Image (cartoon, rainbow, N blue to C red; front, side):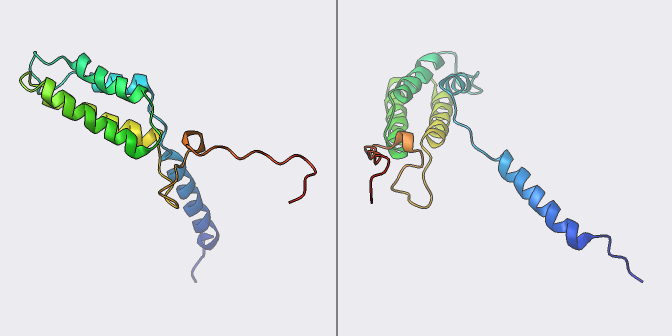
Length: 143
């Protein structure tokens, strides 16, 4: 005689609970500018003492503070800083700071300007949209 310990009823419950916990824990929060700068200026592992980490990270921060309309514009801003800092810091040994700044800059952009997967051409965050808002219809107005 086999006993069914209610697995037919409890399994869907636990699967639903596991999915809810998994999805709830994966919500990506926007990175603050303070977070970005703190992560960027963390003590570099491979840079020599001549690297002006605060200058490099400050350039990334200033670019990000300018604001962008789209994710692609933001990522292009990060790329521009990398090119500029590679030229300015070429002989100072700042490679790991520039790479770290670029990585965190990209993370900042992807969190601040998420892409709507259903419609990649449209920003997911309507507050960042460049389209003008449509005026609301007055109450009682017909369609």
